[in-house]
Length: 176
Image (cartoon, rainbow, N blue to C red):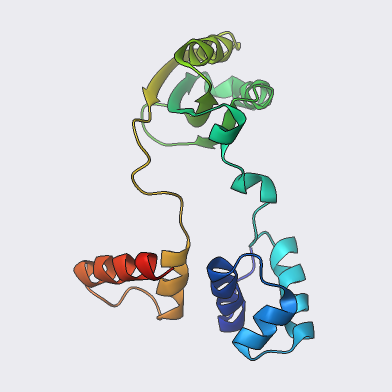
């Protein structure tokens, strides 16, 4: 992925503050030309800096309010086929290859504990899956965020003490 310059990051910051802003509105706020903003938005999207819209949809509004994290232990030689099978399970909305005791960490959503039990059964039925340990999310304590990273980038990296970062983040969150 290509590194972003200051104007790219300023555009992302402005979009986080006003996600529905047009290119004209962003250009006005940032004192850039509309063509510059439009070209950068296209580049940011094509380079993967902007994630797909589907990642903004909350699974809970679709009836999948139960969130769990499943640590999947697999036979490494079958990893590729296991991943191809996991993709076919719609309730697995995200999965990562991880270090540690497990091989895959999957974020799984379900409408109920019974549905989650069925999804776990599907995971365990995949050839090469040896075990699946499930942890239920009791509450989302820190929602997915990137504005703190944008602020950090715009301020030249981590130069403040962690306590100052936390105070800044609290002020930033309440201001947005």
